[in-house]
Every structure is written in structure tokens, then in C-alpha cells.
Length: 196
Image 1 (cartoon, one colour):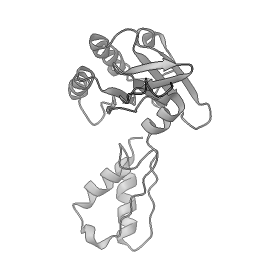
Image 2 (cartoon, rainbow, N blue to C red; image 1 turned 180 degrees about the horizontal axis):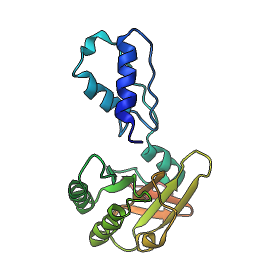
Image 3 (tube, rainbow, N blue to C red; image 1 turned 90 degrees about the vertical axis):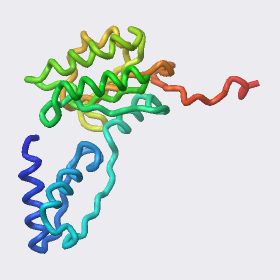
């Protein structure tokens, strides 16, 4: 973390010198990943000299959703709470619009040791527009060692301590419910007459 520009510049430098270079990015490189940074840095260079291939990965949102059930079966937004590159005011504005519009909301980078306020503000904003019983899925280290997952309700999330930068949080919308261990957002199919 915080060394992305150095890594990207070193990769570009070696590629322009004729080397075959691979930059590894967790999740999908085009979603809060290294692909955007490298392409932005290349606008200063002759980008046509390089053959660039961006290989898609599995986003944290998709990985976490698969562990929780089907919480992203309807419209959703992904918002990073990291205020290193975007102002807290901008993050809060986007979050408010997303919650008011009844999107399922996926939160990345919710909390670090030194950055606690953005998550506290997020809970405050979300609680203004969502029921206390809204399902919330919390996944830490999806498909990695020490994986942790929990499905709870919005009213309980303020007491959960196991949230850090490796955690992804999925907040349901008005169509989201819990059945057994699964968090499900109804797509809207008319299935009531399927089982006769």
C-alpha cells in the first residue's frame, strides 16, 4: 500500500526497455486496481509502443457475494471508504445517493488502525435511510487463510470489531433478506407460481 506509483513506474520503465512485465493486483486490476494507474501514467509516454493486456480477476465484491449467497442479484454500487485519494466529503456524498436510491452497497477499505471515522460516518448515513433490520454481510479475507464471514443486521454492525482493510461489507437493500445462512437480494422474478 502507498507504493503503487513506484511499482507502476518501475513496470513501465522495464516494459519500455523491452522487458516482458507483469504487474500483480489483488481482485480485478481494473477495479480499484493497478490497471487504471498504469494506463494513466502511460498517457505521458508513447502508449502505442507497448502491448498491454489486462487480465480480469475476481473482485472482492464478487468473491464475498459468493460466500454470502446472492446479495448482488440486483443493482448495486461499490464504494471505497479510503480517503487517501478521494475526499471524505465526496465519499459521503456518493454513499448518501447510493443508499437513498436503494442500491445494495458494497464497502471496500472500511477501516484501518488510524482511519476509523469514515466507517462510523458510513453507518450514520446508511442508518438514516435503511431499516435497522437490513441484512449486512461482513467478509474478511475471502477465499484466503483466516477467512471470516458473518451475516447480521444493520442495528448490530456498530458493535462488530473484526473489521479492517481486508474486510468487505455488503449492505442489503429493500429487496434483501436472509434465508438460512444465505443473504439474498430478490431479482424480481415472479416465482410464487413455480411450485404448484
